[in-house]
Image (cartoon, rainbow, N blue to C red; front, side):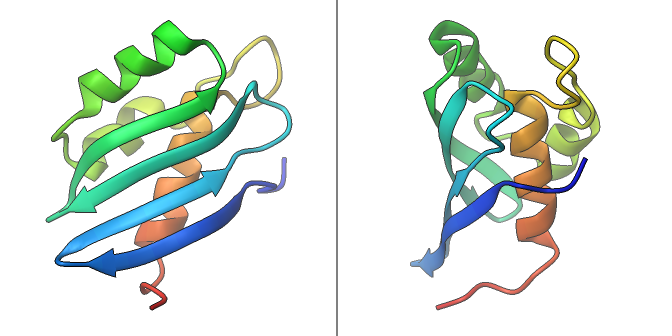
Length: 103
């Protein structure tokens, strides 16, 4: 499956990298929004999707290292779609970490 998510916002202000992405149309969530500070995830929020589960994911990953999230979430498949809301976060995160910030 190709990467059909889109990074809508990728900025840095006061040492906080803020990212907003539109995930694949194969998943239920419509937006993924998070901050990165010193290689740690903060304020992970989803718009749409399974609200309780995605709030739990954000709570569990608050302050977590990006490597931990990539290791745990990459490849999670929801209902045979080949991806999931959590896998989409991992894909977005991997892409963001591989490129410099646009200002």
